[in-house]
Length: 128
Image 1: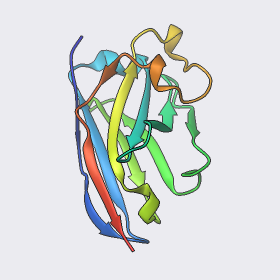
Image 2 (image 1 turned 135 degrees about the vertical axis):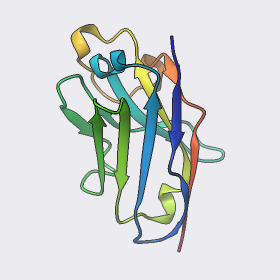
Image 3 (image 1 turned 45 degrees about the vertical axis):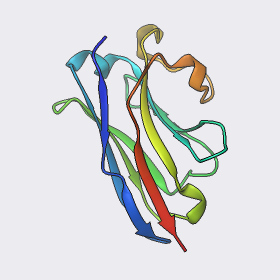
Image 4 (image 1 turned 30 degrees about the vertical axis):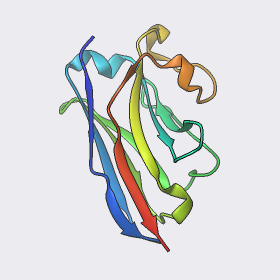
């Protein structure tokens, strides 16, 4: 199935920016629905953003207007640019692939159960 490897996490002050990357093991991931999720201690994993094969994107309301998901098909990477970070954005961030995504379209919503392959996560800490 290949693998996903996140990078780019770190510590930043509120209002700052970070760029996360997810390296994929092959070009086939360009055809799947890909997403970013996050999980804070004691909380359930929640969807952040997703992008389909055609570059159409969707964001959770909590990050809309601040985060941007993108793909670099030439480099086989999935990216998440996070601006205007808030302390409540602190979490471990995961990239994921929906290997069953039909035709490269994403299912509705941001449901973690729809995604089959996950990276190991990268920590993002935002201080006030």
